[in-house]
Amino acid sequence: MNNKLLIPVFIIGAIVVGYFLGVSNKSTNTTIDTPVNKTVMSHSDEGGSSNSVIPGAQHIHAIAYDTESNLLLGTHGGLFQSNDGGKTWQKVSVKGSVNADDWMSLVVDPRNQKTIFAGGHDLGVIKSIDGGIAWVRSDDGIKGTDIHGLAINQRNPDLLFAYSVDNGVFKSKDGGVSWKRMDDGPENPGVRSFAYMAVQTSMDKSMGWDNWGLLLAGTADGLFQSFSCFCGWTKTTNVFDNTTVYTLATFHKDLTVMYAGTQAGAWKTIDTGQNWKKLDGLNGVKVTAIAINPENFKELTASSEDGIIYRSPNAGESWQRIN
Image (cartoon, rainbow, N blue to C red; front, side, top):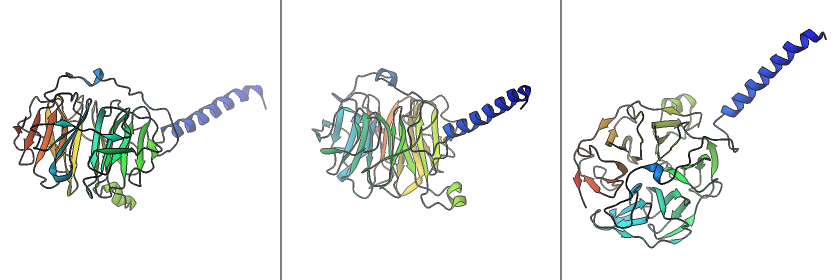
């Protein structure tokens, strides 16, 4: 072959190889370890004061209703419980495989409220079947132990999702027994919360999928979603641009409704996230945790980062301070 023709041939070949390598690296439906965006955050990066109205409970990040409508609070000072609706709190003397006191997420199995999953800084994913006293590791297959997002598919509670900082999104099909890596998660760093809305989307209908739903991620730049195919992440709304979404809450009997907590208060959607309404009564409150009472979906409990507890008896229309 003429030497003058070799140069363009080599150039074209390099471009073709580079293109296919780029496509391969962009694939999100993979189970191998691929580089992810660095999202390491220290406690100071999370902002706010370490002071709390609940002694020992710093940086409140999660709240959940457990058995008999008691409340659990996940904090950077351990796990706390209230038996009087949030007026007073006691630290839970947890047992078992609990290697840290930094609790970021709490999710309750709607079939049995004694079954609770938790995740946090250096906590990994752990599971309790007695309402939060004894815990065992439930993260086989998850790389890393810094879990910032944890969600359960409330239509099929054996499906769980976890976000491990710097390692991506992991999925369990067997109630947390084993996990498989799905993708990197949203491109924007700073995932703070996960929620799963098990509604049948247009994508589900067109593809004929039975595993309906959307996995949603609250990040430092708003709300992102991924279809159940894990074929990429998109921003769902511009309402939360440049805003950290600290918490997301859904209700298993009406998955078109979701609540979100931000630096400036709480928000609500009744159409699976297409439109959002700012809730009166929490303006200016940094809402870092919201829970829906499974026995009364109109009752909401929210917490500020410093442990001030608020209650709504009417699905967020009005709020009253509890403690």
